[in-house]
Amino acid sequence: MSLPVSFSRLVSLLGKFPGVGEKTARRMVFYMLEQDPGWARSLSQAVFDLREEVRTCAFCGNITTEEICGICADTMRDRTKICVIETQEDCVAMEQSGVYGGLYHVLGGRCSPLEDQEVPAESLERLKNRIAELGVREVILALSPRIEGDMTAYMIQDALGSQLPAVKLSRLSYGLPVGGSIGYADRATLHVALEARREMDSGLFGDRL
Image (cartoon, rainbow, N blue to C red; front, side, top):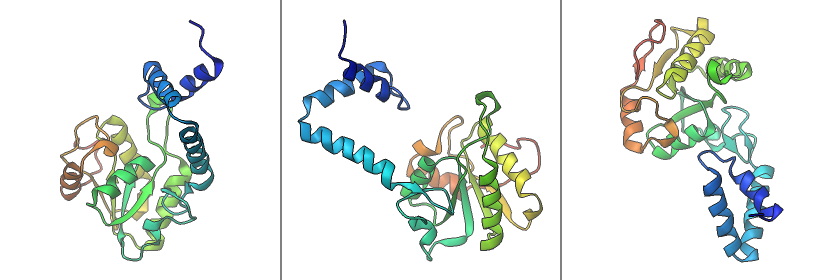
C-alpha cells in the first residue's frame, strides 16, 4: 500500500539507528502518531537541543556541554591512570558502573581493516601528550575483546613507543565475553575485568582476554 511521504521518511530515518530494522522503525512511527502534538514537539526539541548543546571534551573526547567535561575537571579523580576506550558510549558505561576513578581517553575509532576503520592519528597524539603532561603511570586499555580490539591495543602500544615501559600498559582481563562490548557489560563484569587487568606484552596479539 502507498504510505504518506512523511511517514515513510521518518521510518527511513529511524531505521538508521543501530539495531533498528524497518519493522521496528515502523512500529515506532505508529507509536508517535498515537501521542499528542505536545509530545511530538518535545521530542523534536530534545533532538535539536542535543545537537546544539552537546559537544566533545577538548581533553578526553567524552560528551559534555562545556569545553571540558566534568570528569576531566574533577580534581578528585586519580590523574595517574587513563582508561582508553573506543567510544563515548563505552565511557558512559564504565563511569556508570562506578568501578573506576581515574581519567578517560576516547579513541573515537578502532583498527578494523575489513571495515576500513582506523584510530584517528590526532587522538593517538593527544593521548601521548596527556600522558606526558599529567605524569600518567598507567594506561588501561578497555577495548572490546575481539580481533579489532587486539589490533587497536597493539597499535596504541606501538604509538606510545618511548613512553613505555615508564608507563604501565594494561588491558581488561577475564570477565568480558569474547566478541562482546564494553557498552553492554554490567557493573560486576566490568569490576572483575578491571581488577584482573593484565600488563600487555610485546607479542603479536598476546593472550586473549
